[in-house]
Length: 189
Image 1 (spheres, rainbow, N blue to C red):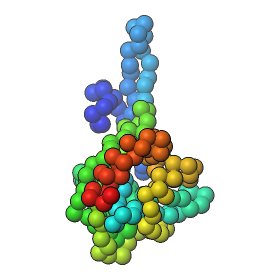
Image 2 (image 1 turned 120 degrees about the horizontal axis):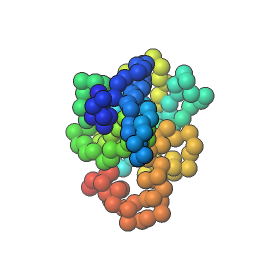
Image 3 (image 1 turned 135 degrees about the vertical axis):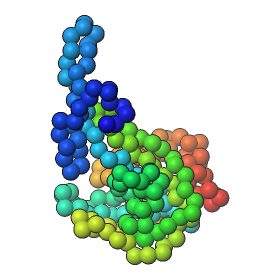
Image 4 (image 1 turned 90 degrees about the vertical axis):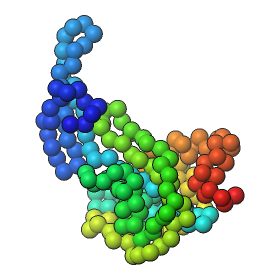
């Protein structure tokens, strides 16, 4: 059971991607009501740099109406810690690896879902293999400039919605932008 659920919560549905958990909750007037929350595997996303560029993907998946931009990432397996999942996803989707990783953010996209997105920065990536894509993925990887990455906050198809607000803030706050740029590229001005 996810630790954010009360100990008396019970799983009422288990699907391929989601579980639904329910519990009785006492309300302020002393009555009770049934509360519920979705649960899913945590995911990892990677802001990966190669020199002064960032790896960006154009993806297609069978359940989406058309191609969409994204950064590398995906589900963390049950036996993986978040960094292991991020490292595996970067290699599988792009063929790139890095020896220079940092966690940048941990985002919980919804209070009604037990789900954390771990966002990593992987610096100085190098290509060591061909991508090994899942049968339900078509991914093209390209290198983009920093400004192109931030401009994704204007793109309604950008898959990594948890990055949009932070990218918009950076576009408005030059100090925040320079701090992130320094973090992303380390020693590259």
